[in-house]
Length: 307
Ligand SMILES: [Zn+2]
Image (cartoon, rainbow, N blue to C red; front, side, top):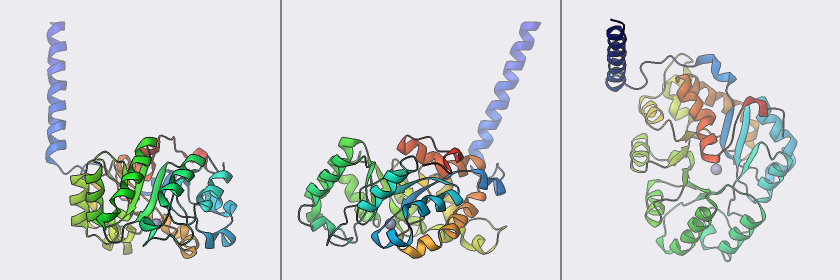
């Protein structure tokens, strides 16, 4: 009798588990959990798109950058700068808060000509020797020129040798091209393509199951009409992207001009607003857990106020 009861209980449990699994499969993945709401303010953020460019150095000394991060619960940031010295200054001041990333731009090499700049591969390998960068980027590919293939092959080889990411600001076509050079390169797609429509973002993220993206400059698109209405939901197309690729998205500020540092608290508030509309498990991933995984770090509010 006892044995029967145990078996019966086991069967019921198994049935219940099946029912739950079935519900999970038939209902939209995001219909069954309540949004995290105001508790979003208790989560640390990882800002996956920080620049500390030369014009910011005087207006925003390193100390003030970390204070801005503290004020907004940004525990860590992925930083790349023009020139790289900005990143290194920030990382030397607060190594516990900064993940340094090597941007190619320096001297006359900027976003539109860097891939053709004299000595670029040597510059990159020299900086990577000298400092512990964990990515190469953010770099732009404004329009794809396949004659740059030899340099890009070197960039990919440098990244893979160190097991670090490349961080690419481009449309969909250059991402496909880079993966065609090496399907195993680790890549973050800056701004999730910025100018690309949600449908193209969804298609590319589906096509490349290891591709990460930062959503900097996308927060208002993601909020859609909900951005004007605290109680509203997310833009429906972006909501699908956010749920389907919840394991590969990270938020970001893109402090490409000082105006972005001036607005830093507003930018982070917009990010917390859209994250607040997600279930806790999803919000946590996009806020910081995906970055923990990608950069092999522990990220927590305990880092606030530290360096
Ligand atoms: Zn940028």
